[in-house]
Length: 241
Image 1: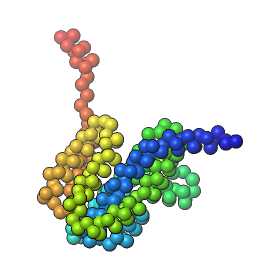
Image 2: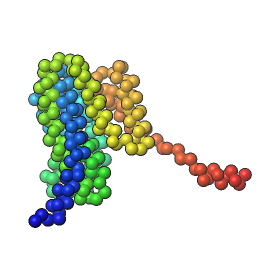
Image 3: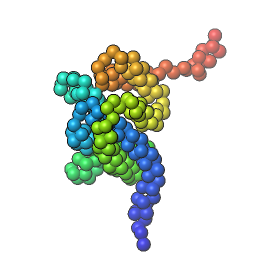
Image 4: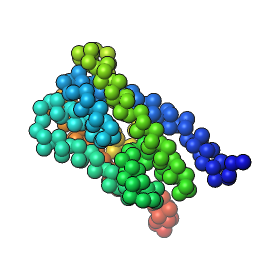
């Protein structure tokens, strides 16, 4: 007879799997696009695959590949990757109660600290369910990321120009599916819209990959205060007059 704890764990996992599987499918498209674009641009297949396994950060990997293949200086490449991954600092603080246990467990959990896993965890209200959501999402997405990059790299060897098959459009389409669920309030929407606008305006003017850095300025829009209309105060003032 199964214990109630095991039953709850199995039910939580079953509840999460459909949403996690949908996210994994989108990530496979993004990973395959990364592999194909990187290899067709001249990056070694083994290096791209190892980077996918060791870094596990799609946005910074795309940026690094774009900057490196465009001939950017190593310092620029490192700085760009660091800036994109700087968001993991607040992620780690928010996931403090999720990444509990010994040092080994924390190190493994930190490697799985990606946007999607954090989003799944924060969507849960109970600490136990947050931990379950984080580990189910993180391990599933990590399991598909490096193989999808490898598969895309194998396909990219014979592609030549990835734009011929529309792989350059597959990337923003895949990333859009990952971003949209997080746009739930006005500050986030302002940040996304301003970042997209900056990227579109600067892509024709800058070297490949640099527009991503400029788009990060869009996050500053989320810090702008939203003016609040004090209807009650206005009405009372009008009545006093």
